[in-house]
Amino acid sequence: MSVYSTVLLVILSLVVAFVIRRLLFTTGLIHSIRKVLRRVQDWFHVYQFLKVPEFNEAMQRNHLHRKVSLYLHSLPSIEDADFTNLVSGYDQNDIVLRLDPNQTIQDHFLGATLFWFEQKTEPDRISSFVLKIRKTDKRRILRQYLRHINTVADEMENQRKRHLRLFMNAAATEGGTGETRWRSVPFTHPATFETIVMEKDLKNKIKSDIESFLKAKQYYRKLGRAWKRSFLLYGASGTGKSSFVAAMANFLRYDVYDVDLSKIRGDSDLKFLLMETTAKSIVVVEDLDRFLVPETESAVTVRGIQSFMDGILSACCGEERVMVFTMNSKECVDPNLMRPGRVDVHIHFPVCDFSAFKTLASSYLGVREHKLFAQVENIFRHGGSLSPAEISELMIANRNSPSRAIKSVIGALQSDGDGRKYAEMIGRKTGVDDVDEPSFGGDELSTVKDLRKFYSFFKKRNARRASYPKVQHLGP
Image 1 (cartoon, rainbow, N blue to C red):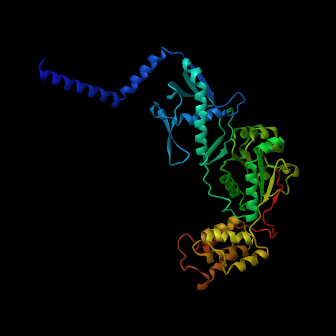
Image 2: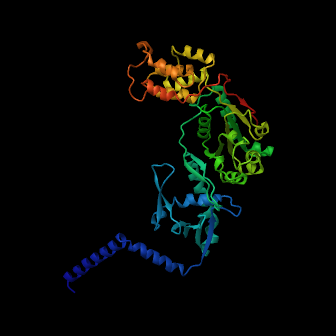
Image 3: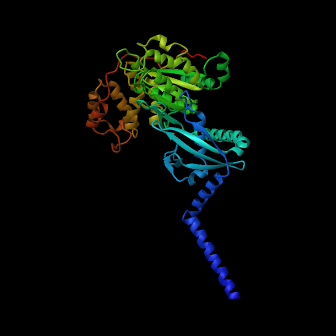
């Protein structure tokens, strides 16, 4: 064979090798070959299948299922699955992959190859993860592998605690036993104890109480009590109860479970929802007094609510949780329902006083002192009242002019309830000295018509004055 023929043969071999490699890696042929080789290998090995169900026999959530889910969806091999789902992550700007049912992904641990796939049963669509492992590897690595999954999942959960979630219960469906009742969205409420309107000493007292609770696990165990804390927040709408819950969640770094009693079918359904909550969470029941009135049509009984607050299930499933109940008033509520043990801390949220007004002015307008403050204080002293939410909305609407914002508060305090008096007052010509900025543009309220619409939501106020929030029944 001549040198020319040898060179030609080498070049031809290189071209053929390049074409084959090109076909393998650009057409997906290599993936098909690997699947065939895997099936051939399966003929020579004995496998065992281990199932991790979403719920146990008592229909309680299996925490190992959640940890396996976190672990599997972090594996790089999920990208090689034939079908995966694209969903938004904890950060809505992130797009993450989720394993499709009946699709298999690989994992490698201590030299062994393991296979995972997800099954969903009909009609409840209850999920189970199935581990496929060679019997020769099971005794050697299984315990270590499960500990590895647990460690990785715990690390991921600790990282995710920076991204809080708000859970809401969905209405139960007929025959839907076992389905997940909680739906969640990212909890992004910006409220903190520094931004809410509350007396400084009271804030410090509440923060100290919460910090003491966090460190008292062994103390509660020693006393034979469940490691949980319960709060009752009562006061008129717009006085800051919801913002207080958000501030508490951001302070504790706890998820929030918002229980809607109108969507619950009965007492046992309420217990089931409590069983599905997780540790390090705040369980909130808003407007509880609405469901304690005999005329209210509700599937939940007073006895069921009492059991939810301090029953045996609450003691077993309420560990490391904070329970918060809100009411507009507790005057017509049976004191036995609010006794210590069911509610540890009572906090009253009254309408705004002058001290709270100054705090709002500092936060919303950047004003600590103003010539109109004396007039505002005098109106409060003579029985004027607005909720913090109403005052804050007025300040936001007129934030470009502190004088105009304070005047709007004065007008609302002096109003007879429907805003007419204030609208007429603003309609008059004001002096230049009373206004910080000549412009009425932007999103400020600039016309009498706008003001009439804006203040139409004010209702007549009770002239009875209440003292600033006070904490009662601070127990261990």
